[in-house]
Image (tube, rainbow, N blue to C red; front, side, top):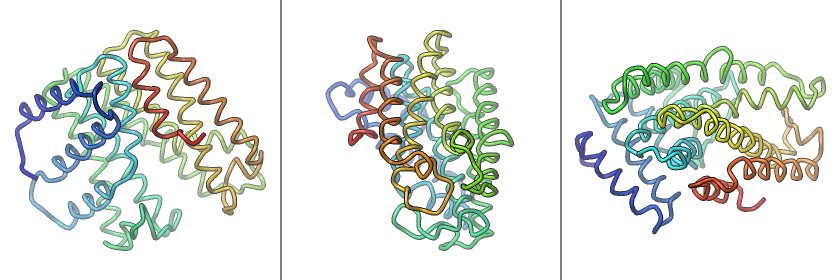
Length: 293
């Protein structure tokens, strides 16, 4: 793909934003995210590490977390050019967490997104280096973002570091690896899944709130919406894996109860934004990923 300068890209994003009402917003934004991810992962000299990074990030996927950042951004009337790189940083963190989770010393999964996992294709050592590089690259993208004030960049970097760190994704993965389902309460399982999944949903939405300089009451609405969406998303994943021998809330409360709770979470998310200007963009986000509920 031909490289273009940042100002030109920002103009293109702004033009695309004008067409959202007349097109499929989710599809358009997903293409925008994929284009920007490809751009950022094409910079610099090609190396085995960069190839593994590209393999992991550009392998497809729903892009639900960066789409959430962009949806909240639109909900808050923040220009896409101000948040697209933040959304991409979120997706790089998510991809790094996936390739680490798949390692033999972690979840030991050999397939990801219908093709072999990164460690199967590139080896374990190179995969770890690629994950570390994705995590650092995500921070560099924000640190060098010319359109964002310096203080905002620092807040965003702090947010993402806290999300990944010892009280976030890392802790969630550790608890998952060392938890026995038969000795775990439903509340403890929910807490663990919040750390493994929910914290990145919250970070995706909170990053958009920071970029938009949202008022406290707007941030509260967004956080209430996002927390419930994250819970619903994880519970749906648990329903799909209800027969697996792993720490799964559905095995404790049953599929019927889990489906009812998903609907309750989605109803609570909708109530949080009901009647608000631009609520349709968040409603379309929910419709895309929870249409079968």
